[in-house]
Length: 296
Image (cartoon, rainbow, N blue to C red; front, side, top):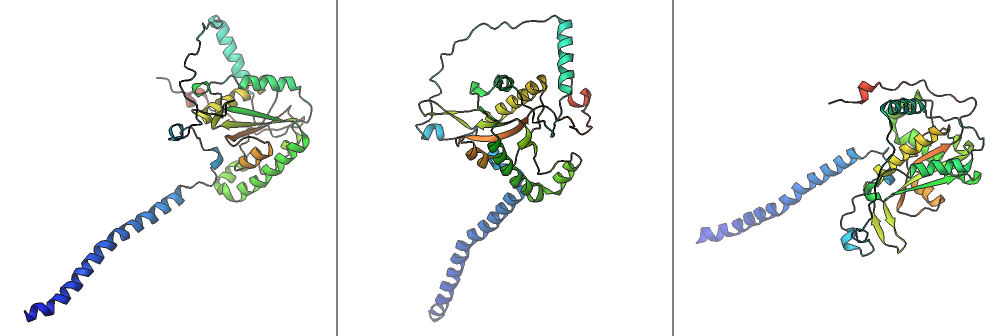
């Protein structure tokens, strides 16, 4: 009994230590995992990726939790009509395909643009053509802002150049800047003042209907990107030039400047006009067909 009375306090201390160790162990295992997660997140972060352009096609829970979203069954009774496009003889098809390729193969990114006026009707038709692009569930999630006002163009230039200087000096990294050196491009964007038109293409991450309900825009970034491709082809077709500009981290400021709603995110900025009389372009070569097509 005497021995037991002596050992009892020792057993209590040991038991407390065991229980304390068991309680602390989960905390110790969680901490390294958290640090590892933070480290992985830091490694995965790419400062050159424009966070404003993240595709919001997936909006889980919003349709269920927010009554402002439109019911997808409201427009089920869509009329379908016959479709019979013109069919060309094979020889004509070949000629047309070759002519169109020859036209598009002359397309270049041009940074030297003439201030010479361009008929506004031409620009309108080019935008109409871009609006014929396919889109997810035919939501047409694009907005084309055409800027011709000199003061607004200059404000756009100031915003873009300020951010682009930071991009070149900090965000893009040495490799990207080195790869661009051969193209003789930098953060100075004189063409934003000179070009008669600036076309800013916004993707609508969701739609806003006349009744203020929201509508899901599926694959909005892919849809708007396709329309941009058609827009470039339409510009080439009428003899105008541009340079595809994706001003990193300028979207929010330009959206506010142009008074666009929060559901719109800037995808691309195109200065549009005739090429300057002294315009030059890099002597680049395109990949041959066997390097871009796989025939199975």
